[in-house]
Image (cartoon, rainbow, N blue to C red):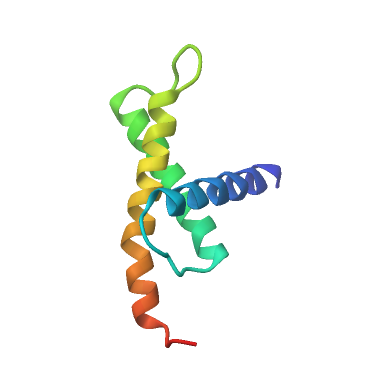
Length: 89
């Protein structure tokens, strides 16, 4: 149970950081931001394991950069599609 909460918390932090890095408004809800951040974290972990840098001595900077990069890419891809499918308020 705590692992799921941890994944969602990290996903929210990564999603918010991704939205801050991208230019312009990303009009996606907070729950989608959290899910995209969590997906970015999972993809970053998978790729870091694939290239052999998932577990290193010290802080895994490459893994964290990959997680953030995937979160930024997912938010950049999904945000325009989300706002296009929603009527203006």
